Every structure is written in C-alpha cells, then in structure tokens.
Image 1 (cartoon, rainbow, N blue to C red):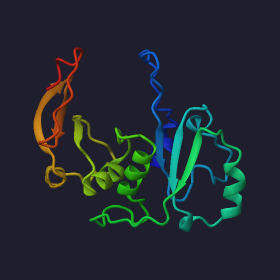
Image 2 (cartoon, rainbow, N blue to C red):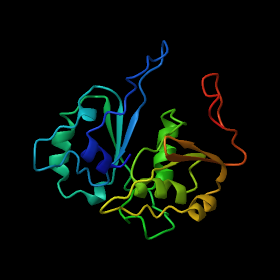
Image 3 (cartoon, one colour):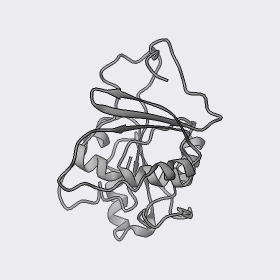
Length: 202
C-alpha cells in the first residue's frame, strides 16, 4: 500500500475476523513511502502498523531524504519487525505521467519481495498505486468493485477498462452484490483460485 492509506486509515492489515490456520503467520505488510514521510513527521503520530510487532517492509528512496542522519536515529527506535529497504538505485520505468515521478518502481518492489520468499501480493491502496502496478504489467488478477455513490470531490482513478486490458487482463465476468457491481479480471493463463467455500465466486 502507499503511505497515504496508512496516514488516512491508521490501518493494521492483519487477519482478525477469522482464525488463522495452525502455523499460518500474519501477512507481511508492505508500505511504499518514497520520502519516509510516515516516520519523518513534525508531530508524534505513531501508526499502529509500526508498533504492533508484526512484519512490515517499508520501501523508500534515500535520494528523496533531506535528513539522512535524523532518519538513521529514528529507524533504530522501531521494532526489528519493521524493515526499511532503500530502492534509490532502481530505475522507475513507469509508462505514464499520470503517476507521480517519485513513485518507486513496482517491479523493483516485487523483485525484492520475491527474494524474501513473498510471491503472492495483494495491492491495497489508492488509484496511483494500483495504476503503477498495472502499468508495469505485474497484476495477475483484479477485483473491481463499483459502488453507486458520487463523491462531492472525487479523486479520478485514471484506471479504465482499456488500461486494464493493456496490462494483459481479460474480464471474466461480473455480479451484483447489494447494489455494488463486482468485476473480476485475470490473465488468460492464470486460472481463478477456487476452494470449497468460494462456490459463489466465478
């Protein structure tokens, strides 16, 4: 997720409503925070995700930091479960100017996570984050929920069906759920995962 999601929701992204299977650990949370604004703040906000002792990987770029020494001092105050990964030497090859040029390379993030044994990623964030991963052709499946709600000051997603198709996904179908429209997209070569408790899914 991008750092704005953490700032707005102070989320933990842990499994809480269902019991984890024996031996199953909580998911590793991943935060994209190029300039480390979550920790280099003028206030004393300490987000829940950074103090619950569960694994977090924060990706940043040291080239965007103006207070290197301060960062090194602050970093030592976080639990060992919080890992900071500098991607300043990874080139960003995003195809569109609609994504902030400071955005870290999604491909570099995926490669680093793979080196850590993490090969299944759920992108949970705003439209800029989702668009960046789509443009790098890193999305295998997408679930899109469209709600019949109009915001007073909407934030354009810049994600159209054309953008999704260009990322190599095809639309498998859609259904109505309480007034919301749920679409599911996948790469043609990727079968949609089915289990005994997901008979309602495509």
